[in-house]
Length: 257
Image: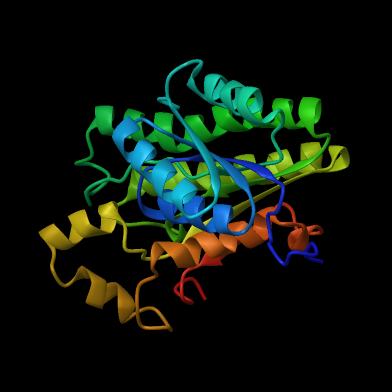
């Protein structure tokens, strides 16, 4: 059930990583509109400051904290900043990640592989460790949504390291759901399909027809806008999804069907 106001996330404190742009920025605005107090986390302060100002000007509650979540201590510092500001942590959307250029497995550079794993995979692990600890200490329960990818659900030619990092996120998500479900913490992931983010725009600059090519394989015949992914995350974080945990939810226009 929703609360009396009809807002999915009313009175919840939500930490959002990768909040500066794309799906993360759309989620920040969506969650605030749905009643949440949000902590915006990314590496780029100018983006976070602008987004905070936009949210507060619309009557929402937002703060920001700059952190590199792939570095030791970054995730914990961001969680601690959230608790200092709001007194608790109810929910988290772990959306930070880096895109990649399309490359065969053999041609991919080792340093690129390591960077992808450190941000997209290890970064989520570090965030969940800190977030779950804070939820248990301050709220006694909570909900986490991690951003995976439709590319994690099967082999991913041209995006091998990226798909592997996101499949790792799926495993972490399901393991955390099992381990912390008894404590009242739900953990799910969303697996977006083609979404109009900076990564997709980079692909378009290389192959102008890529959107049409992927859309032709997608039952809904189009890419998603970031807000459509954010809305799915909002529902999973809300009490309406109170019996949903351990799920990797495709939000892909039917691409994985």
